Image (cartoon, rainbow, N blue to C red; front, side, top):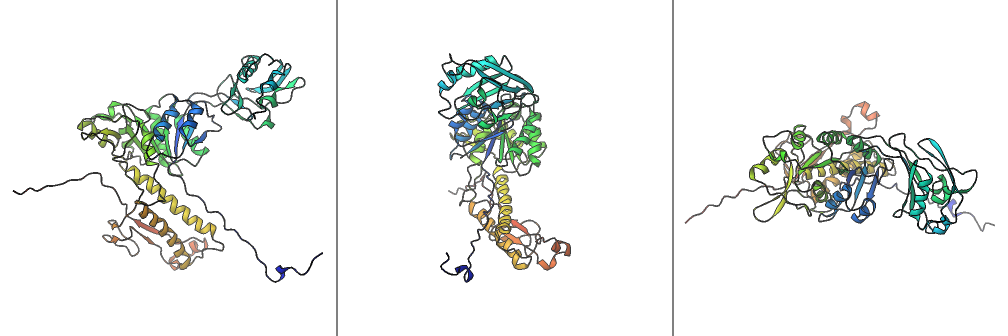
Length: 495
């Protein structure tokens, strides 16, 4: 029974939680696209935070591992990498059984079965097994082998001890290759729950795939995960130059923004008179989102370049870098002639090269267009951070941002805060504005803060834009800090 009136009749308090702000993208995430059968085209992309984890899944000789080794060997060390897959050859359909607990892995559960039965569909054809006998098997691998024998060539069963699951793979490949979940048989001991092959056990099916082009694989990896920024290929069979060009063309127009890197081992790139190499072709296309590195010793050298670039923390102070003068641990530096080095520079092709003072450095750190890699990455971060900051201002506002000069000033202040961080991390710096001006900014004026943001008054908007609740178009002028790559010194001597 109530002891009195509710306090809420006098003082009513509600708790209103502000929505969690959207996160900015990670501009230090590399995707290594391979063609090993570890990851199927349904899963498509898998995240790793250590080299050991990749070794566990792929082994220490797979291209994906070797590329990741070069990536993680950088100093400072990157924190994560993604591995994706494309169907360089036709793949088989498979059923990955549900994860088996320690109890479910007990061999006695299997050896007790002498009348096993399995109803399953492989490649669209019903397959019924009866009288399967595991009583003589001494391990889960042997159990899997026994079931494979009973499948009579229709498929192969393996025990994946790393992930504690049985896998049934079709004997065929291509888009028609498939394995269904098992269903309960009419008689005998149902092997579906025992192997984790039934739908209730938490496994999954993955249909086979026809051969994909590398570009189609890149598009599929992009569709599967928005979380990676950089891309390189490490397939079982090296890609043709035409494949690299197709991927570069896709990445150039992809949204959200990404970059692509490749290593060339062709000596043609060292010849200034030869324009048939991949670096020359990509330079001719003026791609701003693709970079090439030459390495005679490692086909995965560009992974090391990515590893150094992708350790930049844009939220910290004085962290922006230039890739020139940086090292590539584990990659053998090239010893080049002046003519060969000049050819690479002319073709906008990067290289890890020896100098006569016993040092080795990356040079020149450029995209195929000639733009610097660090500026491309930094400006992609800046675009995303400004976009996300304005979105979060609108999204997390408990009321609204009014369509007034005061409201627009909130947006300007938000942009200012991001540009302040760009100055703090070293991407932007004070300097002279040498382009046409706008607002109060004139050509030749100094950007004392390293940037200038202008918003026209709301009263200047068209009625249509006002009715559509658009803010006036903001404009920002920013001055890149740049980096010193060369120096000339004149020493005057007087006796």
